[in-house]
Length: 190
Picture 1 (cartoon, rainbow, N blue to C red):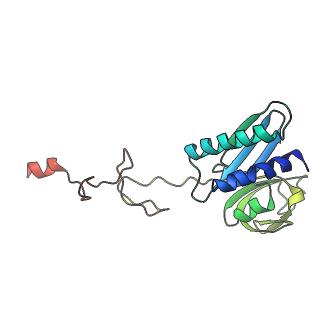
Picture 2: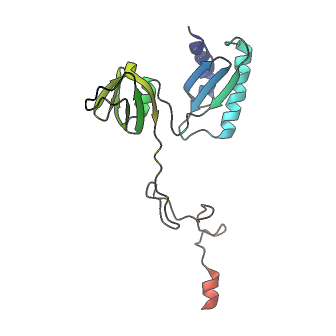
């Protein structure tokens, strides 16, 4: 069993008890990086809590010899894709892939490909109509697409969210009654 596998086996039950799943575990000299995720995301307080729990478990069992830094994080908006499961989760989203080898000049032989991930299985992926096996993928990650910012008072084109204040993002309603706020200056002038 490799060092990373031993660490995974040790920390997965702790994460599961916290309602989190292990997204990635990276063991490098002097560093243990653990990326966790959950449906709905993970906030900073939850990360701090699980970091403390993992630190205690790792100190007790000591699966990594010597000194190291424990880094507990989320995968982020532009997540690395390393395993078949990562790719399966990303089906239908925009990703970028850097392949191994040199491009041949033929159509579809580019070394860097960015497209919506069409499918993923145990052997590889289909990206932009091109089949790429995992052993030909050097690096891959999801791509976060920035959308246009809605004008003040207009619903978001992506979420259809209600009107918000341009400064604070707060809904324009009275905190006591829930009624819409009105401009009293205009009423006083009439």
